[in-house]
Amino acid sequence: MRKISAIGLMNFILFVTNFDTQAQKAFESIPSRQLEIAYTKTTNIVFPFAIKSVDRGSKDILAQKAGGIENVLQLKAAKQDFQETNLTVVTADGKLHSFTVNYSENPAVQNLSLTTENHENGAIHFSAEKINEADVLLYSGIVANSGKTNAFKRDNKFGMEMVLNGLFIQDNVIYYRIKLTNDTHVSYDIDQLRFFVRDQKKAKRTATQEVEVKPVYVEGNVDQIAGKIQRVVVFALPKFTIPDQKYLAVQLMEKNGGRHLGLKIHNKTIVKAEPVNRL
Image (cartoon, rainbow, N blue to C red):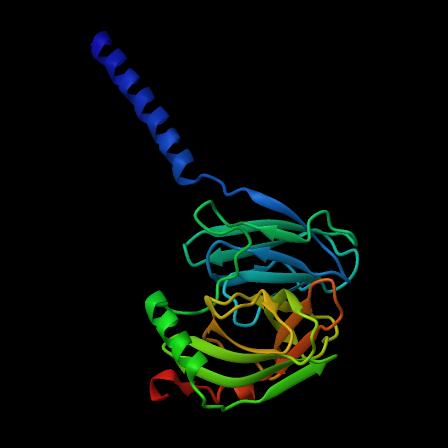
């Protein structure tokens, strides 16, 4: 009987030990990241997947998702020197992200990327379905060679002119056709030609947004506009629309020069885009 009891006791100890180990695995704690936010500065967090829900520990935190962007959260303090609180974010991959939030007028980190090795660091994810690259190349060429104009936004400076004269859509891509004209004999070396979604006005106590939109393809030369030359460039951007209080900014910057140009494209223009397959 003693032998049987000893065996029984040993089995019971093993059972309890195993149960405790399994319980620890089942109730494994999720670490909380330390985060500082300010009253006059915006903190940006880039998540590896789309944000599905945001829970603030207190109203002292102002939180908003960037318009049209799935994985960027912007934070500010609603008041100065608030008491420590927390923030919980759930992303589309089913993961819970926990933050302990404190006030600091000069946060040690203002732009935090939580993207994994399988995602481009700091990448912005737009709400768009899969894009067929072969179709994008084909449609960009069609738009570039089409003589049809259905939009007109213009800026010029010192003999350089930039004109948006075509706006077309096919599937999940909008094609922006821009004509660049150099009326001088001085070549125009392009430093950058970029697209941004910007706030129309800076709203009081909200995070001011400026989000760059990366083209999925560019048709044409965007390095240099030689003297007395006119060039057509087509930018294929993911399909999106813009709220009334925002606009799409097109920024053309000259390398080592001052002939910088810009266009403001509002939603009322974007929604007039015509199908490429009708050209």
